[in-house]
Image 1 (cartoon, rainbow, N blue to C red):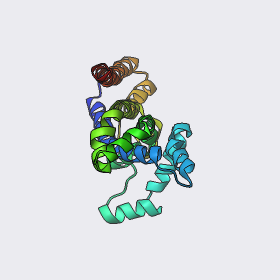
Image 2: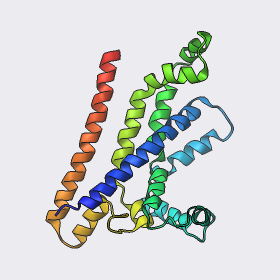
Image 3: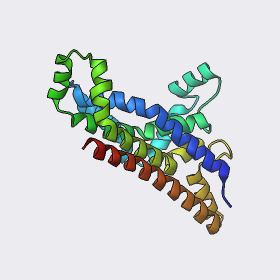
Image 4: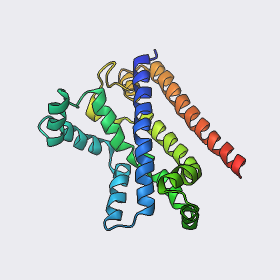
Length: 223
């Protein structure tokens, strides 16, 4: 039996994570690619940290930070009137943290590949830094942006440990498709788990295929 509510939550979580993180990824990726400042390595390590932390460890720290007893959790509750743990908002914030490296690193590498003299030529031609970003840099880093989207979307769909730690498995609220698959296996319902796994695999593969297909087409057009 397909859990359509869990699929809907997974897709909603993935889309919102991408919509929020991609603009941040462009800004942070560009800053890390061009800026030279003391402590730059520390910030790059901080961005990459979710890649090496076990999801349960990251989930534990986020669960603690989102608690009403913690400064951030208490501030959130005082402003918005509700807590973060075991809510969709909570798993969205957790997803943003867990996906930082997937959203930032591909875009940073794309910005780093742009020759410095190209940007300087744009400035000499009278373009402002903002115009240079829109007219010169973004078209060149677009494949990196597409890669960041594909990685972030697919990783969010399959995220299990962080989402389970922060959100639990509340029906129609925080129970994603990955958690639903786990629950079905725990109940020895292999047929339902297989069906939902196939759907998750198909959605992830189609998303990645479309994104990389668009990137390849753009390279052929501008090649």
